[in-house]
Image (cartoon, rainbow, N blue to C red):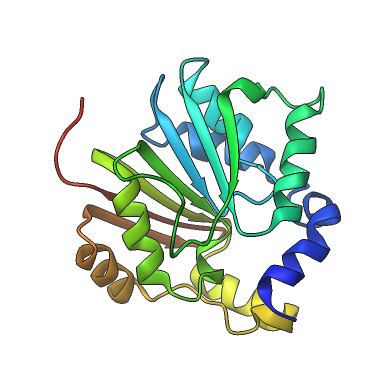
Length: 208
């Protein structure tokens, strides 16, 4: 089974099995990032939209989110989540789109921020995905690649999970830094610690 089919089949129960205990940690993590009121954020590999309420807390009613995923079933679950009275999410602030990380259906320099949560390890062509992230960003825009497991923890988790994920890993730090530089991103910071992988980078220039 390929990745897309796996995610489509797993979408209905994804939050129960993967995001039951992540709310508080994501709240603190997203709050620590340089995401500002009124900004536009592209959430690449958005899945069921678990980041949406946390991002909206930062960008406010003037901000916008574009959630992009190649699994239509995941996006359907994101829509259900957005309409749930338990989630503080305004559908006026969020658009959803299907798209491959290598060929995103968005014009260049449209966003101040690109987030990628719990998805980057699954991208088959990681440098192409990074190139697309860079293309979407306005000058001075920021990229945040996030996993709630360190690199080694995530590799072991995927080995145990098996299926289409068994070889899905994060690049080692020097390789990741090299790819980020190669696509034109700067101010690179990589945190690889127990229960957190966070790669930050910025597009040169300034829009502020």
